[in-house]
Image 1 (cartoon, one colour):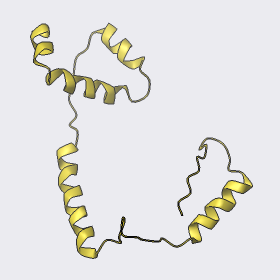
Image 2 (cartoon, rainbow, N blue to C red):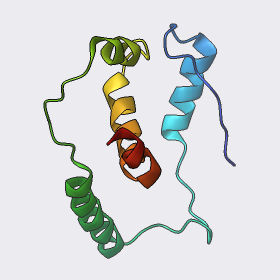
Image 3 (cartoon, rainbow, N blue to C red):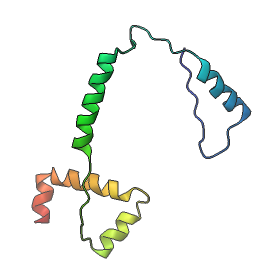
Image 4 (cartoon, rainbow, N blue to C red):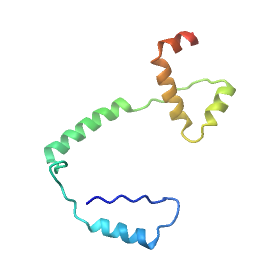
Length: 103
């Protein structure tokens, strides 16, 4: 049986939530045919793929000069604005029409 419960992380836990977490901690994991337990060999394979992909995803630090207006707009997006800029730049570079407009 699967139970899902949302917990607000910015407020202290209630007694009910603490009891629920303690119960979940001692509840055994039950595997079935839809989700069998992985063998050590399968786990090692996941680890290898994970390590290979980590290198592909590693971001590089670059220096980029932006206009004051562009920087103000970007910062107005809030925390994580550099990640948003990275995704926007990647999408723009994959759009040939956008590249032509900017040249």
